[in-house]
Length: 237
Ligand SMILES: Nc1ncnc2c1ncn2[C@@H]1O[C@H](COP(=O)(O)OP(=O)(O)O)[C@@H](O)[C@H]1O
Ligand SMILES: [Mg+2]
Image (cartoon, rainbow, N blue to C red; front, side, top):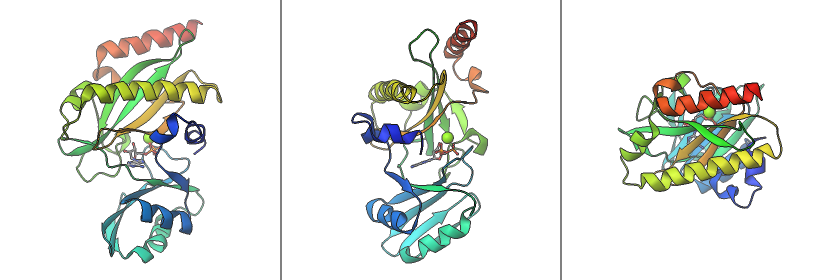
């Protein structure tokens, strides 16, 4: 929430941030009226852990899914059931669910890593993290998603969307996000999770100032050498 707030308050970026609030009875009720799917996530989360999705199947039936379970409830029972799945020591947010575009029927999101080697933000790594199953809730590598070449995935989408328009938006939003966050916080590297929905719209999901880039060298070697070069420049600077 802390990193999403400056973006939600930015006149350009706010339309790319899913509707988000602190989790509670009223906010969940509001989100379930507005959207067909809603995510509940720990405010300080890691590797896709503790994430819950509630999804409308019909006016009388909502599906609650977590890593362990997936079951159906009447809408007025959802809050109580979700509460049972939460860690009482943690703070949670409730967020508009994004209907992710798919590749070979599996949802994916895009990791963009930006670095600021010589005073300007540059996008030095990109990958599409493709979830292991069509029904997967999250697209974290720690939860079985695989990194793929982002161009290959955007050109092979199940939806017929323009890969070049999506790529342009991914780059634009990544640079805007880096600028805005960097005007508030100081960091030299930024890992973004961006989503692409089934209509081709790009969304901001998460920003991480200590991204784990393990494994990305095999996805796009020429990009990876750009990343290493930027890292070297920053260390010597
Ligand atoms: N609002 C959302 N709509 C659709 N999918 C989401 C949403 N929020 C999170 N996800 C999925 O869950 C994954 C993990 O969420 P994220 O906010 O990045 O938490 P974490 O810090 O655990 O990685 C995302 O990469 C995405 O696949
Ligand atoms: Mg994430």
